[in-house]
Amino acid sequence: MRRPPVFLILLLLPLVSAAQLKNDTLLKNILSREPDSLLSAVLIQPDVYRYQVIYTRIDRDKNNQPSFKNYYYNVDAQRYFNPASVVKMPLAFLSLEKLHSLQTKGVTKFTSLLFDSAWSGQTRLYKDSTAENGLPSIAQFIRKAFLISDNDAYNRMYEFVGQQTTNLRLHEMGYPGTRITRRFMRMSTEENRHTNPIRFVRSDGSLIYRQPPDYNKDSFDFSHIYKLGNAHYNSKDSLIHEPIDFTKANNFPLEDMQQQLLAVLFPHSVKPEHRFRLDKEDYDFLYRFLSQYPSETSYPKYDTSEFYDSYVKFFFRHGSHSMPSHVRVFNKVGWAYGCLTDVSYVADFKNKVEFMLAVTIYVNSDGILNDDKYDYETVGWPFLYKVGQAVYRYELNRQRKYAPDLSRFKLEYRQRPDDGRPAIKEVDN
Image (cartoon, helix red, strand yellow):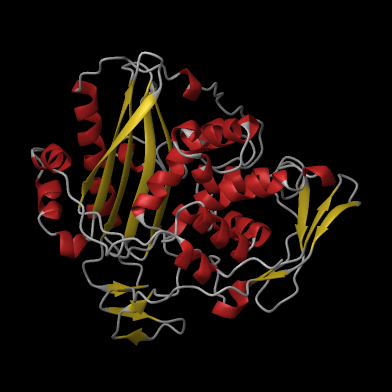
């Protein structure tokens, strides 16, 4: 029986009341009492910077069971921001989930897979020089997507899971506002509906399983018009004095980001229907690469002067590029079109502190998109760092009835040995 189209699934879901701004005094006070001029200047201009902040306080009971309380600042699901690379997070989760349906065929996340092409705009992929065996795999895509936010890794997971399955599954899980419609490459709306034929192969190249090309026939809800900027450069480098229309682009509300990360880090804290269908091995793998640094990874071997420890840890990215030795951040970030976003779970093993934080900001003072002139360095990254540190300091001083046991998130990491191989200096991310 054919599955119902996405728009019908949306109609069957509980109706959500009209979006409204969410604000909590606690979070506003935490940030407003920081003696920082840049932070203050941004916070008093919510319409300019379009920032949204979700702080999640985590308290444990005597049995170490967590409870969660969200605090919001300027959060509005209808205030569009480009989610950029954060969409790689659900694609990684869904890729592992889909692999469970292929286990009987002898396919795992480490199985090599080759991408053929069957439609305009599609590209083939038969090798992966970053992998130890030189071949692509879902495991390697996930490593690259989380370690430094590699774009092609996302494209390939998008092609493996499929546009229809991705959106239908997320909507079934209770994320009707999330919409993933595009690869990170120049393709038309119709081309993005098509996904490549894929072959899973053994080390000798013999076929294990063939996934046919797919096409999404479902409809999307494009009733909300999303535009950003005052002007933009088009694909021909001509300046167009109009905003970019993101109505049909990827959309991933900040609350959905936070909830999906929480569902993976604390699966037993959400209802079964909101969990990804993963097992302990999947969770262990995800926890490692949501938190691991490029300096601790041999395959891929990234140049750590370019891809330093705090490279994708925005709440700790400041000054020296090192991270506190007693802190691990399990997160995903994104940056594009002047939008910077980080959704994180922070664990401080020394001070027994944990919290979640999700923040997005738009920094584009000239109002022009695609001109490569965004205020990431002067406003965006400093703002995210200051918000992250303000909440971290609050948590360090907050009294808890029971100190958390964070052993589930305390993994063993090893510094990468110097094996003489050249390191990767340039990545499309």
